[in-house]
Image 1 (cartoon, one colour):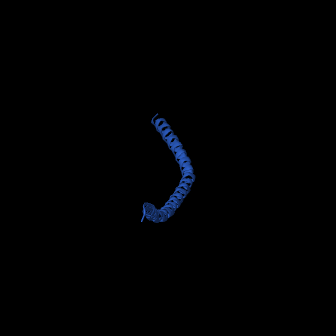
Image 2 (cartoon, rainbow, N blue to C red):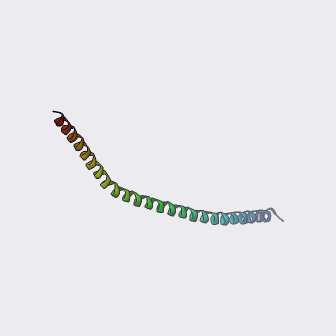
Image 3 (cartoon, rainbow, N blue to C red):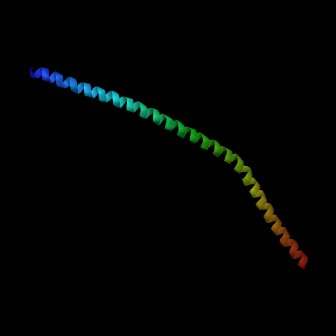
Length: 91
């Protein structure tokens, strides 16, 4: 066997090893991408749910804030009014 034949055999074996490794790595990469897509879908669903909850809370909080403000104003009015009535009774 000459040097050329040994070189051809060595390169053939190296090519077969690299080809096998590239096929295995490609399969693992495809599986990894599929898992990443599932994770991205789950994150998207969670974000959509959060947005929905946020919108519902926003629409529920607005009337509550108005009711609290009206209640505070009524409470202040009642306190001022009761102080004036109490002062007038003492006279």
